[in-house]
Image (tube, rainbow, N blue to C red):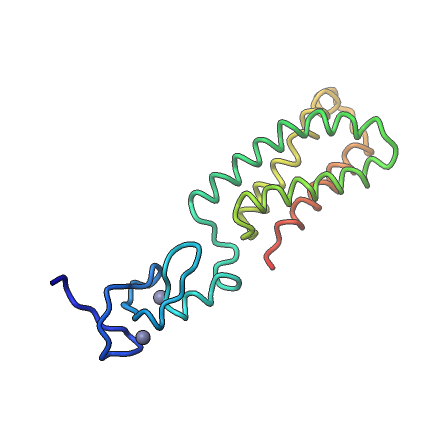
Length: 161
Ligand SMILES: [Zn+2]
Ligand SMILES: [Zn+2]
């Protein structure tokens, strides 16, 4: 027979199941099925609070991929925004949308890393469009303000809950 483990909450009960997070053995009564495996009641309770802001490697990768997608898709979007009235308002909305996309790609964890990815991804399209002006030494405030609004909105979308 395989090694016998005993539930950490019920020392007399044998079990072959252990928590995916802390590795402590748990009996079938105590175990909680989560989307990332079987967990003890304590760790199963954590996801919302304690895990927020801590992205797993695959979530980080997906966030970065989403960020690259946002940066590329954002170039034509920003171009159109510059032609429209209320550029700053539309940019803020677009930035928020981009931030939400990146947030979802990262498993809705949010946190500092998600904010950095979202801010960079949102700033890229604006910087690409502003580059000729910036290189020529022209500082046109309107697109700069729009970029600031978009970047802030993208960051806000990724704040931790
Ligand atoms: Zn556990
Ligand atoms: Zn138990």
